[in-house]
Length: 132
Image 1 (cartoon, one colour):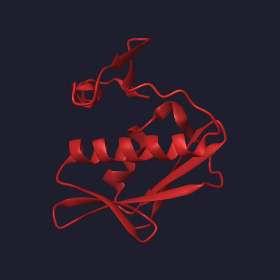
Image 2: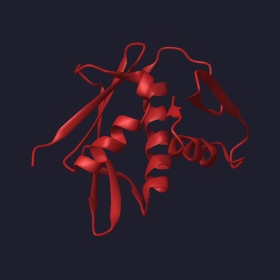
Image 3: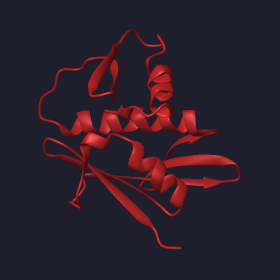
Image 4: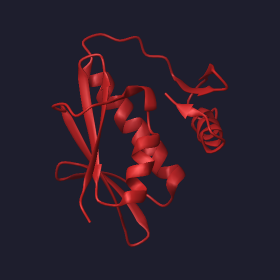
């Protein structure tokens, strides 16, 4: 089985996620659908794989996160990708929020850390919302 790679762009910052597992490819395709782009030279490349019942998220030779399930993997990936994109932008305004699109509308979920934004975002995504 061949490997896959998906690209994401915000402004001039391009990231890539790669792996071998087709289920993880579909998972990667569900992340940040409005930021996905055609193949480009990425500033950073992340790798995701499943082994021994766990999901492993790495960058280069460094293991960044280990997750027990899809929800933990999503949370780890969301944080690492958001942080990498923010580091790749020359200027930014940081808003602690989750954003989904559903029924033709965007929903911005603002709140303090631990308020449940990621859990609600995951729940809405499982019901068909697009995650931004």
